[in-house]
Image (tube, rainbow, N blue to C red; front, side):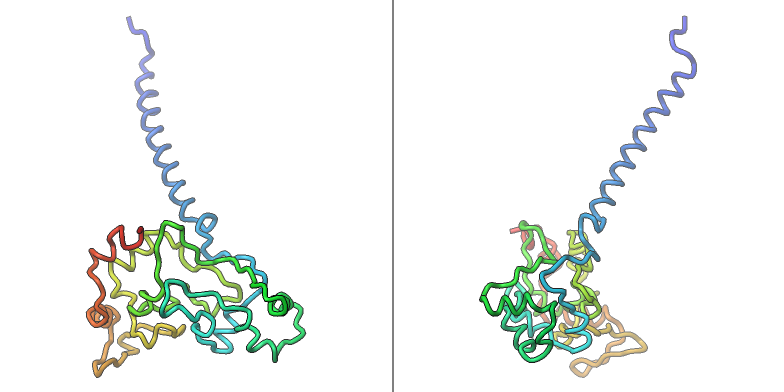
Length: 231
């Protein structure tokens, strides 16, 4: 005597396979959510006490990154400029601009402005600006086209897979130290060759591999080791 209808087997199989597909979809959705700007804040401008424009100061005026971020070449932190740095110029120009009143108030009171960090890594991640700069990694490699940002935002997701993309093959991104702070740097190509130390380069990978040796960059095994970033 048949207890279950013949279609029960089909329903059971459909339920099992449907559950597998549903779980796979949920996993995919979670991964996409974790990589979304809602979580990473990529391309999302953070509110600041003053609407500081890198596009104006870096792109239009041509200020060097190191004028404000003075410790970036010798410290793990790029550094936030003190109010005095702002007032070096704004004690003479835009004296009455309402948007700069918080800067003037900070200067008068001696109380620092509280900026919201844009490129903010988790506390369990160790990152050293000076190491990357001295190994030929340009500012805009990580921070994006800062000179085109009216309001600052993080260009990349800053997630581990993004960091590892460079650490696994730094030759794709490394550049001459003299070009680290050049926001308009272009890798060498057949149409735009680059001469360095008497050698003509027409390919970024060839240049990168030579610079990796010249800058004594550690092996891929070293810079992809967990302890390199998680200390």
